[in-house]
Length: 416
Image 1: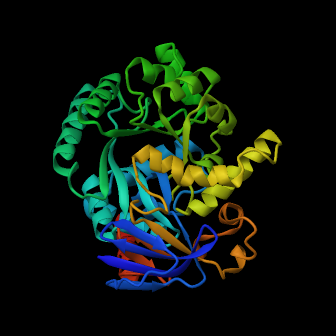
Image 2 (image 1 turned 135 degrees about the vertical axis):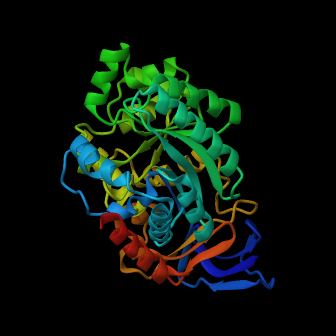
């Protein structure tokens, strides 16, 4: 497919952009090549799309269901019992709703860990997004469950590692408190053998750290390093309760850290993400929304603003985590994490978001990065192109009404 974007604002200048297949083929002042699709981008600002580096997409079905609760009470008494009732079909419709919400808020790639991976994989394929998808690994330190989880994930890899060019397959070891060392070591070995990523929750609460020290004599990052689970393939969500030694290990091993400010604040994990410490160590830091049961939306606009303001407030320093750096956490840092060759240059992947420069929250535009992080919202996104395909134009997404209705019916089925 070929697309000609006419007259967009790119890096402050009016440009035409020609996309051929899945690549940005040409950027110049005036392009006259005929294309299969043409977008009149007058007044629209071209930017790279966002990456949601940690979420559980089908949790859209639980949005607003169990709010204002303590984390473990929320998990054990509300979330896990209802997740046990999920089916592949329900996950498919929940994940499609999540994809719709992300597309309409300028996100083209998301990193997912959830049950019934085939449902999420199908949602990614059908909606045209990019994703890194993993199945939750939990065995609660039961040897028989461990064997079953290992067998299941090996089978999923065989079936879904090449399922879709826009989808990466990863392992999803949930956490050190829900998985045996046997399963964690297998995940580390399988990840290295197959060269695939691992997505894990780490040091989300103080209790997790205390329990790890009591059981293993080590803090969580030290323990994961000891058993060989840390590498540049590792995506560690949360990492709120770290010390300087752990930050150094993370940087040395090339681990990618994902900060989830809204979910962490809402569930009161008891500490503030140590951005300055991790930055000083040299770690690659990304941003995520977490699931909608703990956020309650999938907007990277909200996530960026919250992340920046939280760090300034916590350190009593308005210069901490400036807009350009925060925007990079949702874009460039995450592109690096997932090996995405995305950028507004010729030869890059054809992933582009177009913002409506006439939206009040984007006027005036003294600094585009500041406007995106501090002022903009999802309604500012007019169009989204992913892999050379138009997923949204004029804020309209194909089949969005049916996606919403199917999700509503799925919620009824789940909670009947």
